[in-house]
Length: 381
Image (cartoon, rainbow, N blue to C red; front, side, top):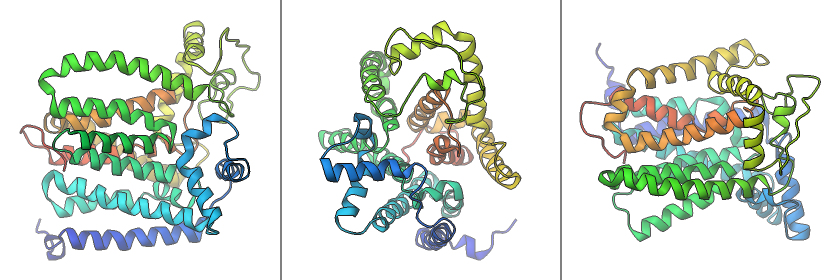
């Protein structure tokens, strides 16, 4: 089939102009439909910003891991620009991430049309974009994940300067949402397979020991930092979706150690294995299934077709993906696996926020399978 001239003449500049126009239209629709959302989860961060202004500290240590959002809200209150400044910053970060996402796609094959189409899919994913007008942590976290991936894949040499750059970016991710910690092992694996593949086995063994010890300490610190988090609660009333009990009479489960700890979780898994496996299966289905019984038929059809088509593209040519883009694929898969394990151990989110954070990675993987050829793997950028 002959490609129309408008598509054959599409270049990077034209593609970005069209994307920017569509992006702006989506943001206008979001603001018109939702306004600026300061309800639901937002009061947690707004209240902490108020507390920070009045007392100089957070109410509990767990809010340290949401500092980027809280400090942004605090600054907007100090300057009298609340809540518009917060939304403006979120939208700017989202716009930058979209440009870099387009560049990531373009770097794979230099095909402007294909890169435009994949970037368009991310732009029109209404539920992904909707967090730009919510004063939650998701918008910045989603955007920072793409921006960080671009920075990481752009590195051609692992120098001290680049290492410091990555460490700074990782710190920002970690203090935007605690799941930013997952980018640390993902980054280590990427760097090993991108720059030290001959020593990969030895380095993986070394970093596995160090990584498990570090992850244990970081998780225990995050879990035990206070606040409303209760790791045992999703097991007591069998929560598949966070905040939604599935039984009316809770189980009588006691943990002979601090429940919000790795040891506490380990006790539940080893002493209530049947319950854990049952919940793990249901949570896994909810996570990858994306469809929710409480959403409308049109909503479920849209997200179902969108995600299932992406899964199929990845699975049918996964071998080519690994052959051509091994370091990047390992980076994506490590992040995906860690988020999935977190869901299995706790619960999935009502509006698919956990898998939405992985959406850019899933789209990049699906796109890479379409253009992958039988040749050694390349850098994305």
